[in-house]
Image 1 (cartoon, rainbow, N blue to C red):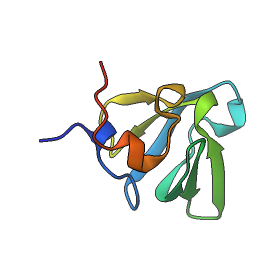
Image 2: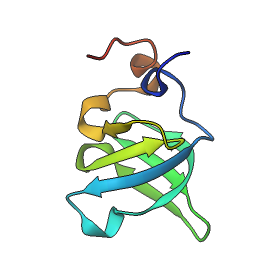
Image 3: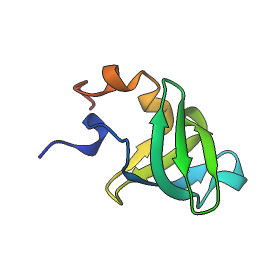
Amino acid sequence: MSDIINLPWLSHEISITDSSDPGLIGISGKVINETRRTIEVRTRSSEIIIPKDIVTFTINSEREIVGSSVTQRPEDRIGRRYH
């Protein structure tokens, strides 16, 4: 099975586990859009645009992903090799 980092994230569950902005820690919801530098998340009460470069997160409760390591367009991230 492919690693979650190489798959499309739209409609998957995301949880912010760490951030330089304490207000973002603990946010969770469904990914509704992704750009080179942001992830847009629909929570139960709102839609939030989260900068990738200041967060660490999980997708579907799988391994933690450091946002600054995936600051490229989704179409470039999918299929890229990460070490």
